Length: 208
Image 1 (cartoon, rainbow, N blue to C red):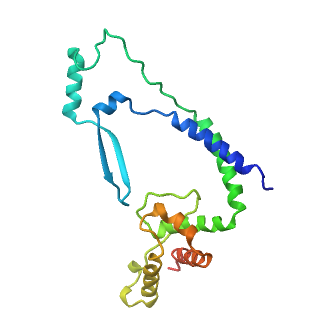
Image 2: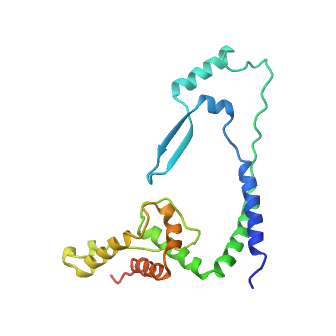
Image 3: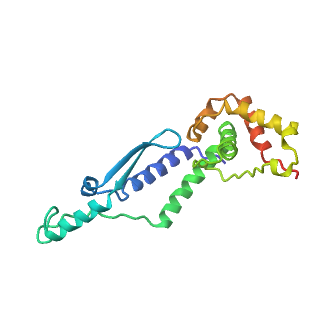
């Protein structure tokens, strides 16, 4: 039976997880002053920031200053308090995420439109973005075998040519980044989502 309080329970669990995640370890201000930062565009054109890089020469120089009593505070001075390291037990994380999963399951079961999109999203991640790092929350897998190695003359196969043309046509309805795929599917009419479902399922057909 659907639980009327499922959404409230899900929100409460997410807040607890966010609170625990916010207390995780972080770079100290001193480390950020010494380390460098790379700011760049990732493979999909999104802004990415990587911190904590120190050149080998600079790291050695900092170590020499510590030994000479210069630069950083000497051992005889008052020691700065070390940032507490907080870790969470695997049992706690498993319990919280299990509650979150149960709430998500009942919400998805009561929303067939989003469930359809979630299934299509998981399938298209595999067939339309083969080298992506995005993942779906659904434990669905789709196997797609290339047929060209099994054909003596793949160029003359009308079925293969038609399927490649279909893939190119559907490519115009898909975003360049897999991170935007789910939102794009939400904006599509249901008949287009069903067509994409059939397109994704067709990749798994194998009678060889």
